[in-house]
Image 1 (tube, rainbow, N blue to C red):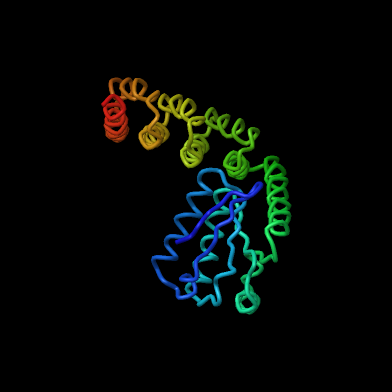
Image 2: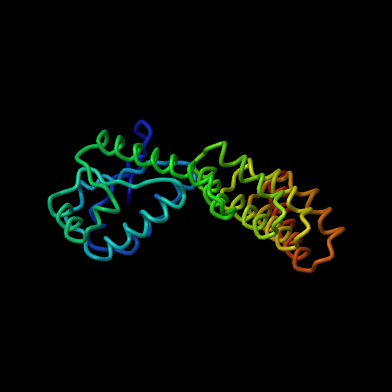
Amino acid sequence: MHIATQKQHATVVEVDRELASGDRESLDSLEHLCCGLAEHGTRCILLDMKNVRSTPSVVMATLASLQRRVRSLGGEIALVHPTKAVRKAFRVTVLDDIIGLYENEEEALDAVLQRLDQVRAQLRTDLSSPKKLERLEAASKLARIGDSRGFTLLTGFLSDADPVVRLQGTLSLAGIGGAVVVEPLIRALSDEDYRVRMYAAEALGKLADLRAIEPLKAAVRFERNRNVIFKANQALEQLLGRQSLARA
């Protein structure tokens, strides 16, 4: 079992010694915990490795994959209190270029926050790209890490003349999730492009926000595209089921 505790601006996860065996259950547990933390806004995840004496290849591969997933969610993983064996394994495989290793939490936190600041600065620069989709991707990543400027720009893409840009904007908002994206996605139900309407409906069902019930009912009533109708009905079933549970 992995134990997570909050410390300053980071969450410290004490990794159990079973990880060294490459036990699949232990690896899955660590992945689930870290991804869950990142999805709920944790930007700095420190893995306390003091109980881990070795890192077989399956563990190394899992950690590399986990770092990529957490970075895609706007966060960063670092290792603290690594043993000599763990340090050597990371150095030999050059995995220390992907995941930083530090002696203590303070050192790791400073390094991770500095890197995240650099990432944020680069994304702001990317907002000036001449290519719309590159600007949209930068805005999406900024919004994911809690940057209000990124979210404002991202919602603006829903009014773009290019339906592909509007579709990507809708998908990005759906990926970010949370109550803040519900209103923009409700507006997207009236988009001219059926793909935008379809993915907006699907996202609203998954978000489980009851504000979407009436707009989805209206979408079903006036929609002509059967794919959108299917997704809107599916979303309504999810939301109405949740509403019934709330009243019970």
